[in-house]
Image 1 (tube, rainbow, N blue to C red):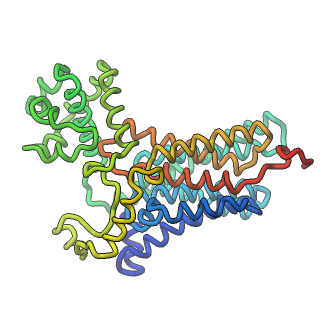
Image 2 (tube, one colour):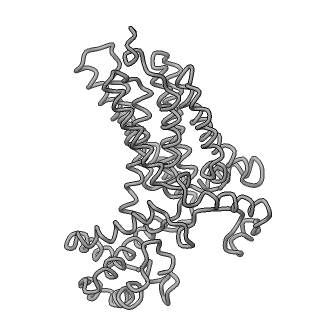
Length: 412
């Protein structure tokens, strides 16, 4: 994301080129899903209007966040995949669309660490689209589907690795991924110690007693499922949350292996807080203006901003807090309903590429949300943004679609 933001800044100083291009992926993908139907049902229009005035779209699409970039890239990737299946018989169009999908899913995988989950479902969808083509026998279709899936996974993996190597060559060399893992490990140990103060920590006691004392005497009592930030604010918290050596990692692995119920209970509380995202200071729901460390802003040539427009945006978004349009649970429920509808249509004979791509997108969004069970250390609303926009696109497709001939009782 930093590289793309830098490219956009070279085109025109500021972030507006980046924001416009990112939003174009979202709006283009939403339109592409509706346009899969040659004559969309009129009921889809007011629904699209509702999505457009939601702060989930109206405000978040104007915010520079990697979560928004990831969601838009993944959404556009599935839209490209659906249209590639629709135009499968046109080799040139299919190649262009599959190439675009490859780039978009690679971008998604590079933008978020757990974004590879989306690429997996996209590859399975491509294999299924290839396998349902009726030109050859059943066994050949299965083999073809496996080959397409394996090829897609290999290409995304190769692009991800090569791009990662190229980007790391231009990075500042800070081990951010390793540090994030250490924070997760210490956070989980603090949560387990909060639930059961008698939790044994023999590895830390023997190899890093200062960290054990920090967990028992400070972190456990201040632990909250809403996020890890307050633990950094404790005396010595900055160093303790990113400890040196491997003792914390070994103790964390021991917790999972020897006390799985305690680990699962602690993780469940964190994940549910992320999924429910209560409107509190600990779980940011609305992002407006420009904010940050003054020294960092100055180095970037920026300044803090909270003007009348930002205040209007915040007031507008606040009116939706507590309602369904600002709820991951609501959008997740919509996805489950859409998947059930797609399953019913599948049983009725609607097995086209559009249905496969839409179902894969819904399953990918649910799996992506589920992956935060393992990695979540904060409950910011933005983390599960892909779940929301995937539900918007899936429901838009569902309301726009007309029954296929086999369901209406007509001849093909």
